[in-house]
Length: 420
Image: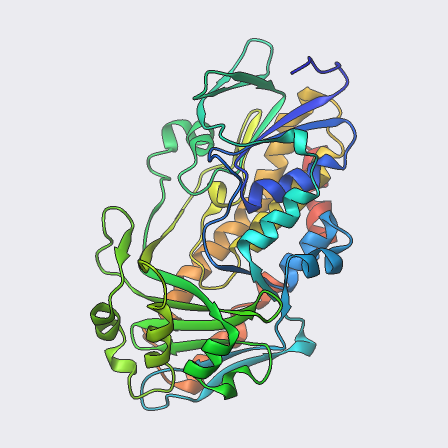
């Protein structure tokens, strides 16, 4: 590629999933930035069925893509008319614990692949590079960063941002000697997802659960179930998650009817378990995947390199905040890089990003881990008591959903301007 003019900033993004594609959209609007997006796989893709974007995630995405309603519609997003949490097992099975109405500001649910497709569609094709697996990261004598790829090519950048997932290569470079102690670890739970046609889900689970586009979460003994509508109402995502005392070495396990029956054996007096098992097994080679997380991370930035999304702060999915955190990362970096006019500014911008983002992301990681026990009936103070569970749910989401995006960006800019 041609050498950049001296007044331009060349940014390399490693990882072409949701975090990397969102970040590329946040940066590409600034005319002084040259963006290149690299994906290790032979094509840009996303694993997993669906992703939920809560109100705060949508507010952050609106900062990046102002025409967000049109954008989400193209991606097949389904507005949740309510999010309802009920007991799926125990003496009070069927009791509604918590219900967030649409007037409270609800999220949308959409297929991960559809969301990525629309994010990539907004980007120039010439900046998208698939089949580029990162091999090495080396600062050179000019203060730039060299990325070496397994195909033998080398690219130089003024800034490198790793969006390459929980087992990130870029993360190792950022953390250096602290990489091992900050490595991802099993969270003690597994989950599995499947997509089934709407009419089949309604027939198996019961029509009363599909009278409106509602997300249903089921709290129970040792496990958690969820089902919601997506793809413009054509499909239903079903999720089964449960406690995992001993994670398998390859982070996944085959799901059989016998295993699921044993996992949910204390749920069978409730209204939902048998139907969810049937729908989960309605796929080729069903697998349960171990949940992993970053319990702690000393920094998200090191000089001219930083990490975002799961590469920075992989969290368990219990509060549905992972995608939102990645979008917030992109929003903040987009704001900071609007004022990065020289390569010498890059370390200060990354330092400000780390200072503002890391405390919030760590709080979400810790809160999500605690909520896992709540959802699986293992909170020692609540168990499966509906009233005690209501008290917990009422207090655990406001700090996630209530982030003031303008104030958050202003804090980042203040940290950047005042960096020493």
